Image (cartoon, rainbow, N blue to C red; front, top):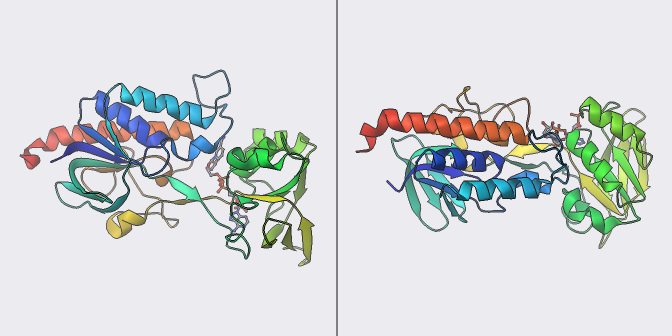
Length: 309
Ligand code: NAP
């Protein structure tokens, strides 16, 4: 056995699990193939994470979590997990480098932005099509951009973009925003944001950069062209569940089903954060999941120690 506990993913949920597991004295490893901090590193302003009066950016918050975790000594490995076998007493984790065996596993692989799936989107990604206003917003100083979506991300990022751009068209497929009230109230007061309701993009046009969008109004059935310099797409998230395939139970969108102890259907296997089926995806719920998962895993290891001898 290489480790007591392995955590896949070092976003907020994984980092919280690492703090709890390593502080609990468990020999802990965290696998992260991308950036430590996960999705929230791309958020510029977090004002609802308790304990911080000042507005924090996601990178700073998760950087502090990583430094806090380091105090307790979990191992962080920059390796891509390719395959996992979860049904035995030992969980087997195959990465791009080697194979590890662990007593318990916490899945904290999170979720990624959903693509629109329209012509031009892939071709112009990185050349005017973006999924991250925090990363790319400053490139559009004085320009006109479109934001697609009506959820919290679309609305918050549209407002963030107004710091730089001349105008934001917020294009939503219905005539009512999904975003929470406080965010809705703010965006309606923002004079740089113009709403285009009941409308979906059909194509992103341009050769070497975005030039315009072809739009389709679902009510009037009319097609139109809107000149924009950039398009920011926020149409939801899809769970990173590929490596677990059919080994767990999922909801109809592929998020992992757990009980209140973050326990999946398999012994010694827990899930935490955005990958989990839940109603509120926030840093505060991700870190809570991570703590519960690590606590539950620790208890499970104690009760089942005889199986690993
Ligand atoms: P979301 O809440 O799922 O919203 C996705 C939006 O995209 C919806 O308005 C949806 O329209 C629209 N959409 C979906 N597929 C589309 C398509 N093919 N074409 C056009 N529009 C499409 O996703 P999110 O905004 O990324 O948020 C994800 C989670 O993170 C949520 O739980 C959210 O509350 C949370 N979050 C919280 C904060 C915060 O509290 N500070 C910030 C960001 C995100 P419909 O409305 O018609 O379904």
